[in-house]
Length: 194
Image (cartoon, rainbow, N blue to C red; front, side):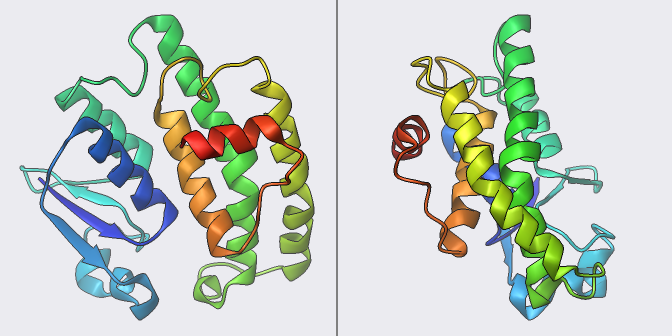
């Protein structure tokens, strides 16, 4: 297997996942800003021109960070990052979706509608990007309330892929110089643990 990687939030999710499990694979790093993921030879691997991509031993290509992580979880089950019991798995899945859609989503929408890099992918709507920036502090406040029950990690007592999704979101926040509001003590404490 081989991982096609880049300095971006979703590839970072896979790299963190692999590091937590001690998985070592050959990695080819692509420079997104130089357009390497949009060259024909890479587009043959992922027609969306996005990373990460995991090249399987049989020559097929698996894309989407969570799909790659699930595949790797099956091959390398310990330590589990998707939960051990049915209940743990359900809560990790729930919180991963919430972190993707409610926390990471507004950051991603802001970037897609703001950064020149994405101008050829969608019709950018700067006013929509502004609404997403106004939404971000509300979503962090929601998360702060949700994790005020004392749990150390997003989905409960164990570090999981939901926390990895949060860590990737923190990468985006850092990139755009967005700081978590100081009054959100539970989110701040979680971010410091991560």
